[in-house]
Image 1 (cartoon, rainbow, N blue to C red):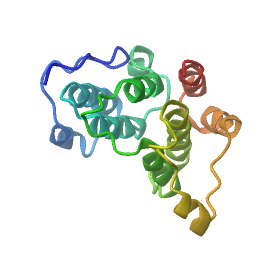
Image 2: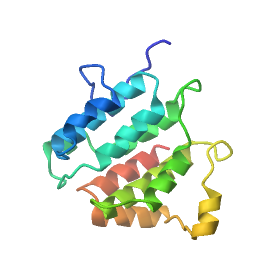
Image 3: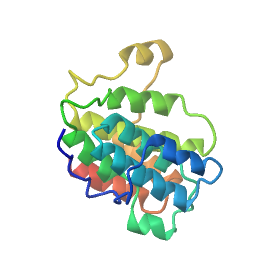
Image 4: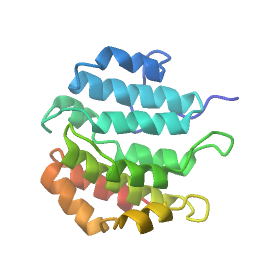
Length: 180
């Protein structure tokens, strides 16, 4: 397979990383963890593993950051990276169903930092729905019916990110949505 174009919204890893590389960050979820997850996402993307790259973006969003860290100025919350990847995932590579994935992530979130992570998952759910064809990437209708899940509106997501997310996170998500 030919090399896949690097995502311009993620740092270059500097080395060939895998998901196992992230094990060194088990106890530290700070700025280093955030940047390492973004680098790992880039490496997995370039290895032709978009589903695994998206899982690393999920990990980045779980970082324990206050919002003013320099790494967030250099690498803002990766909504534009997710949008870019969803719009360019090679057909031959496994993507899974990001719409369903983010729906499940939002409705099954556990602590730590649960509230901001739930809003981030709903934000990604809306991005995925806006980019991917609904016929191929549907919501989990069974979960919606059996559990009474009501996805929040984009306006509610924006307010949730503004209230619970990192500084300027809501604006980053809005910018990614506007590009869809």
